[in-house]
Image 1 (spheres, rainbow, N blue to C red):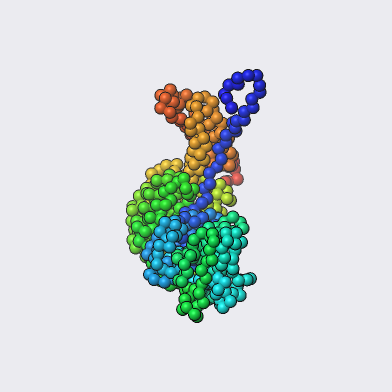
Image 2 (cartoon, one colour):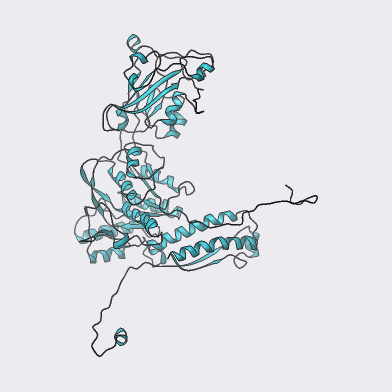
Amino acid sequence: MSSFQQSPGVETVEKDAAAVTTGASSTVGGHVGVFKWGPVMTPMLISNEDEIVNVFGKPDDLTFKSFFAASNFLAYTSACWLVRAQTGNTNAVSSGTSLLIGNVDVYEEAFSAGQAAVGPFAARYPGTMGNSLLISMADAATFPTWDYRGQFQSAPGSSDFALSKNSTNDEVHIIIVDAGGLFSGTPGSVLEKFSFVSKAVDAISFEGLSNYYANVLRNQSSFAYWMDHPTGVTNWGTPAANKVFSPLQDTIATGYDFTYVLTGGTDDNVPSDGELQLGWDLFKNVEMFDVSLFFVGSVTTALAKYVADNVADTRLDAVVFSTAVTPTGGPIYGNSSTKLADAATYKTAMGNSTYVVHDQTFKYMYDKYNDKYRWVALNSDTAGLAAKVDSTHDTWFSPAGYTKGQIKGAIKLSWNPSKPERDELYKLAINSVVSFKGDGTMLFGDKTGTLKPSAFDRINVRRLFLVLEKSISRSAKYQLFEQNDAITRLSFVASVEPFLRDVQGRRGIDEFKVICDESNNTKQVRAANEFRGTVLIRPIYSINFIKLTFTAVGPNVSFEIAAGV
């Protein structure tokens, strides 16, 4: 419609002037580790421990550190991006030499056209768990003598799609069985069945989706990929028009075997720091992954430092949680002087950052999957406490103390520091996790990792500003390409101030002021196509020290006089 009417009339125009600033998420976690199963170098959003098992497998002696880092965090909240690092693992295959298919992108690029000579199928993900898989298939020719015919209602034959193309014999059944019991716990359990899928590359199901058996596995299976057509067939994977698709030949008559036990999957779950770093690099993408709480788990100081420097200090919208470790990367043992010396060495290596939070110890916890006890770094728990306080209170509340800082599942600590030791740790900007008799195990400090006196040397203030910065930045992006005039500037202020008043009312801010006018958007600024907003915040601080004075008052002394003593 024209901006100016050319003849009398009424023009209706609808505009949205109700811009608001909404709060950004601050509870989502992120972690990179090693797992027995699951996609490699592909962040997966996980909500609970059962999902970790379903996607990445149960823990063992090499993967428990990553598994329990993730499960301990999710004991406090319900959202975490997990990345399985790429190590030396390979996928189990039907025949030939095993290979690496880390994720669906690798499959699409290198294997989806049948480039590998490894038989018809490969395990969906790398690892020895893939060696537990048995995959069998049958069409009309082999169904009558097929061992798994009882799992299907009827024999495959010719689909309606094929018949519409003047073709026959395109249907096939596929079953995936947990022959070794590594997935289900029961050898021989059926994991997946795919009925009446097609040999025709252009086959379409009743739902309008591809029914070509290779695509069905690619799109729907959690356990396997198609790699090639079985031995002895000729026209599978071609369009359906005017074809009689070649049948699977009788196994006894031809010697062909259309049941495949996958083999050759390997584990290498002792990652180098470099392999883990590549996984952490994925989280540098701020726009793709909205994560606010990273926890490194049980890792070397060098890797923790890498994550702090290259993820947190690059994104500037998240906090990394790390645990002080010995020079070898394990729990801190020894006498008081040795422990404090190791903690000081760790802190010196980590440097100073308000985007890092340190704790000092490991917890001893029960591993129900292997009926044993494990030492696990506590940084995933402290990150979990920060996530939990978002739901029970607000992001700008401290996650420490008797009411908000209770650690779950800790049987004992590798180091339960005394008051003098806690004093020394706090000087190093390392928060203590402490077990108090009768009060449980709790986070007993809320410093960030900077030694410089600053408002940002406390977790609650750092996280308050992360929420404010992220929320207001998202609101500000809607000013891009607008006119830099008084109306736009007033609109920005009008959208930000109600949000800050809400945070103020929820005990996050003491005072605030928003400036967006000609004082900071001068003619020179506007001529440079810039828009400037200044947000001044006076935060509310957490209580770290309590001093109580008790005075005995004589019978002839007033309380007012005694209070001034």
